[in-house]
Length: 164
Image 1 (cartoon, rainbow, N blue to C red):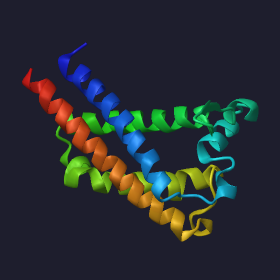
Image 2 (image 1 turned 135 degrees about the vertical axis):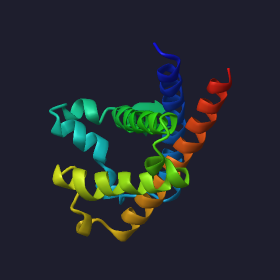
Image 3 (image 1 turned 120 degrees about the horizontal axis):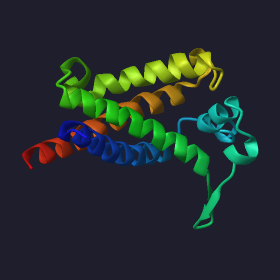
């Protein structure tokens, strides 16, 4: 495997895992959904739309007395690592129109694409106009902070690996 591709994959994986944790933390401070809408969250709904039974999508593991939705976390971190790796590739290839301003515009574009267009079109979440303002505020800011984290982590790792 070429050094450049290996570096990009390492940077994307690390950035995606770290930024995925950041986004989960963000959602604890500013929850994007009401408790009723979060009973079956978007990753669980998406998996059920793919035909995976609710018995699997809503299964949990227990940690410190909390029931944690492992299937949701797989989707969450899979999404985060995929787009962090895509972003790391854009950094490595110097695609400046995607990576300007530490990725903030890219984060906004991701929010628009997934929360206003793709997931509503798939009926995974309600249409944008039916989502509460609090959800939009949490998600747009969360996506900006998520992509900023991807930028900083991926850039640092790529810089360090390139110096080796």
